[in-house]
Amino acid sequence: MEQAAVTGVTPALVSRRARREAEQSPRRKPAAAPAEPPGRSTGVTRPPATRSLPNRWIPRTAVLGTLAAATIAVPLGPAAHIGETPFALDQGDVGPSTLELLTAQVAVPPTSPNVAAAERVARTDVAVSRLSERNPLPECNPDAPVEGTNGNLADHSLCQLWQPGEFLRPDAAIALSSLNENFRAAFGRDLCLVASYRSLSMQYSVRATRGSYAASPGSSMHGWGLAIDLCSQETGNGEVYRWFTSNASAYGWQNPSWAKRGGSGAYEPWHFEFVPGVQEKGKWYG
Image 1 (cartoon, rainbow, N blue to C red):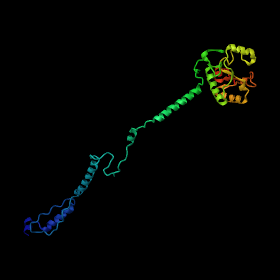
Image 2: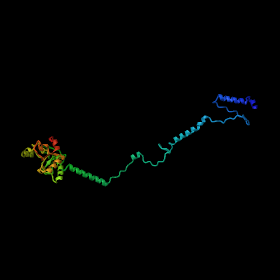
Image 3: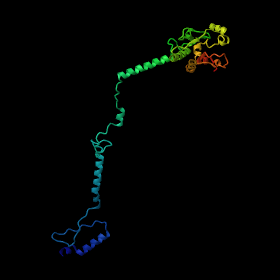
């Protein structure tokens, strides 16, 4: 009663005013109640003070900031590498990389001396064999120029055959000699020839004795070293003649169409000409 008389406000009025202000200003923070004098109670129970709303987000913000700092700090640590994670399982050795495989030096084992020697011997044998097939006349130069006229060829434009006194132009001589080697393998002897290259004077002589069986001097393929006449033992033996006619064309030699039975010229089954050379002269017609 003494306190109420001093302030001039009764406790009932204080309670009503406080409620009225709280209803008019709900967002306003309620005023703190006046301190009670020691040893005395007003009879009003005050609820405990609560934390303000912003303070509730402080723990969450701190947690997110800690996680972000940990995420950034892990890759940049001294023990971490780009593309790795400290949580990866230990997989052991994974082998060399693709770049290491491509750039690695490979040791090549040395070639065995026996193998190297065998290869050299084999190639030498093949080379000698092919040379023998190309030129069965070692003294005949296939690249020698053909110079002179019909029946008057230069000496270097003729090569002697296996039969003494018989000559042909180099390319024709080498081809016929290769054919003769096969003939010898088949029959055990050399091919027999009656005639090969003829000089102009010889052609005059044959023309005089054989008439139409000999070409006019200066026009015969014998005068160019491109024709041969076989011996009668070759043309008179069916087996030999069939073999020769069947194999001669493979070496460029043929019995011309005019010399065959029913041809435009005299029948001469013994007469054969070297086709490449005759075509060179522009006089081959079948």
